[in-house]
Image 1 (cartoon, helix red, strand yellow):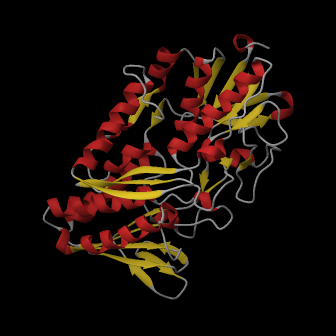
Image 2 (cartoon, helix red, strand yellow; image 1 turned 30 degrees about the vertical axis):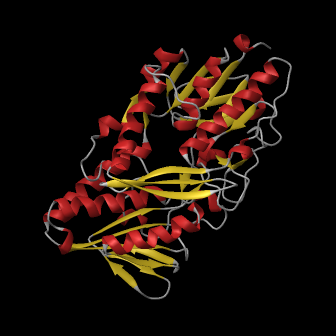
Image 3 (spheres, one colour; image 1 turned 60 degrees about the vertical axis):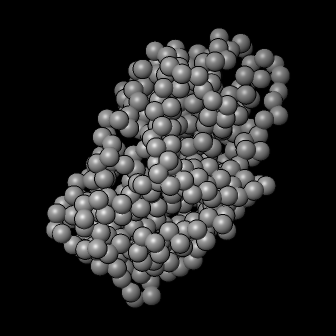
Length: 391
């Protein structure tokens, strides 16, 4: 079956899903992208919502605009059920048949005891706005304690998302300084692992200790989180942090849609895939981004750039099969950690792959580099400017 005759349904309107739809269209496939939102939420730049440096509308990119730029169909409708044997997807208001299915739904989050008493930057868009509003209310008190942390998932070490928590923490520190309130607030970072941030590399880990010290941020690490309550966070060793605001990102877990799908899952609920991103045992289904179980080094991470890499790898295999050929592309060849970790008044460039690791301080200019990246990402996806190699 040729590309023009092949209907590919992409489930998910995030980084993985959008890149998949774009790359598939470039190869001539008929593509339908399904999302439960009318826009892409650009998580890397949402870190500035809590401090008011960016408005929620600026963190969105319309799927309708992407449809016009690339020619894929968009269906805004929640997915209810997957029926792999029938090559069918059941949505809330309709059913879609497919020749090839690309799962890019993202994952879910673990729910530790009392997590509803926390605020997060890595959840639904409205949660970032709720964090902003609570931060303003706490700042209006004139003094207090703010705790920042993230959790782990022992069943899948790639499911930790700590970077955005670090970014929000340092941005809040900088924001309080600008408000003349920093000396009135105690900031505390917590995590259950002994060396949070270690996956970035030893150099980055050592640099983080210096960043905590310079910002006068206390740390509580290496102790299991017992749970949360309206007054703060409790730990397994009997200690606690009493806080006016707790910013917390739980570790990830598999998407609930997958539980009854019959697809092969790992212990954390992520879809097991081949190096091609093809789901194990499924000829017509691929899984990319956070929904997939990543194999590779201990430091492997679920990040936006890896989601896009996986989308392109999957497309190369789908296209090769449509041509009666095969592809040698493997997502594991591209494992890396890559980010510009913003601090509000600068940033740090962090890069790690199989051969090297580095963390480069970028005072002042780093902040504007990340801002520029957000504009670049939107404009390049809309084909308003050329895409840079590897981006």
